[in-house]
Image 1 (cartoon, rainbow, N blue to C red):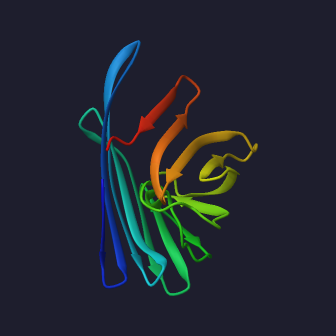
Image 2: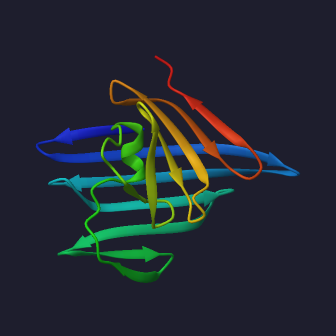
Length: 157
């Protein structure tokens, strides 16, 4: 995962490759790219590859004051200005952020501060789905909460 800033453009690229063993084994790879221009998400794409085949492809493109969301060929317009998304969570503490856009699902999710430098993302039932802890503005720990297990991530220095 890396973030590059050129002039005022922020480019983020992340590749996550996971092997899951639940009754049977499968491999899931996420390839994510996001570009921020002038403080707004300009475009993003997330491909999910399951066992070597494209399982989903979600793209978002800024078009004037709206965004065109293309989710596996289906299109939707988003009438909002997206200034913070899931890809920024890894590099930029969400200070004074109340919502984020999830590139992997095309959804807007609430962000809540629960302690100093600690935030949670919640679902529509206000249940915690992920928790993020920061030091000096950089993510140091995360808990990704799934129905079958909690995945803990910790930054190694």
